[in-house]
Amino acid sequence: MPLIPLVQCLEEAEKGGYGVGAFNVNNMEQLQGIMKAAREMNSPVIVQASRGALRYTNFVYLKHLVQAAVEDNPDIPVVLHLDHGDSLDTVKTAIDLGFTSVMIDGSHLPFEENVALTKEVVDYAHRFGVSVEAELGTLGGIEEDIAGEVQLTDPDQAEEFVKRTGCDALAVAIGTSHGAYKFKAEPKLEIDLVQEIYDRVKIPLVLHGASSVPPELAERINKYGGNIVGSFGVPIPSIQQAIARGVRKINVDTDTRMAMTGAVRQHLAEKPDTIDPREFMGAAREAVYEVVKSRMEAFGSAGHAGDYKPLTLADMIERYNR
Ligand code: G3H
Ligand code: 13P
Ligand code: ZN
Image: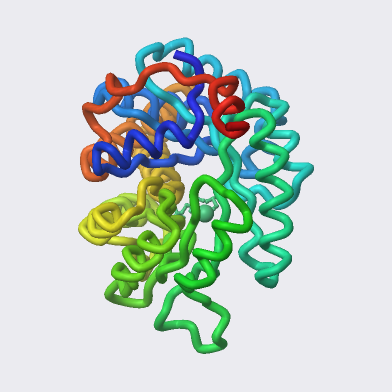
């Protein structure tokens, strides 16, 4: 099936009461690991590329890698999503490359400017049937917010934001942050805020910074010469509680990065005579597969690939124009 729009994926997830993992991609092995998991788990999947990933892959490689993934996995519903788009220009580039979904991240802007930028992107993207994720509130640890820079998403503002912009999905700030060091000790998240926001906006919510940073991934990296100390991620049960309250898209990047790093370190440490990158990149690919597979099970998307009927961007254009 061709790439599907994010809207379809999140609507199906809503019907089925599950969450869909959105995994960042930067290279072939990472994507192959993700797709192997989706295939084995019979799960829909969101593949997302950051601006850094587009630069790293020189745009065209990313585009064709994802096309290859789709061709190789005709039964798996795949969304190709722009992660943290920063401007209309970046969004236009992604749409030209064939992305079926974009994020415009105006969360650092004052409210009115975030509304204006998001609305501009929504108006543009919907002309092509492309879905739009926006963000309100700033990510960051609640307890470490000494400078008052972390702003959890306000439900009143969220309602107004969604009404005025017409975005399809909303990324919310409930205490998560990007990277391997999300909390100083025990995780603290405002899970109930998800329900409050969802009741007001009634569109699918997105959880950024949702890697779980399992201790075994850090331990493997450290055992073979790394230095990841004091890392804490979002526990899987917290993500499941967020899914039960309206989160449908769960962004995971750090976990697959750590999985790849650990696998490469172990391989090179144990086999110092290795000079064939296929050996350690193959190990990294397998490590990505393991992580993604367990997330698909935990988020509940496993077993749902067959629920999807092909829906094209042309269908979405018609829908947006109704
Ligand atoms: O949210 C950010 C993602 O983890 C992507 O990171 O910009 O280093 O590719 P990146
Ligand atoms: P992590 O750093 O927790 O993997 O978050 C990734 C993310 O939010 C990408 O947009
Ligand atoms: Zn993010």
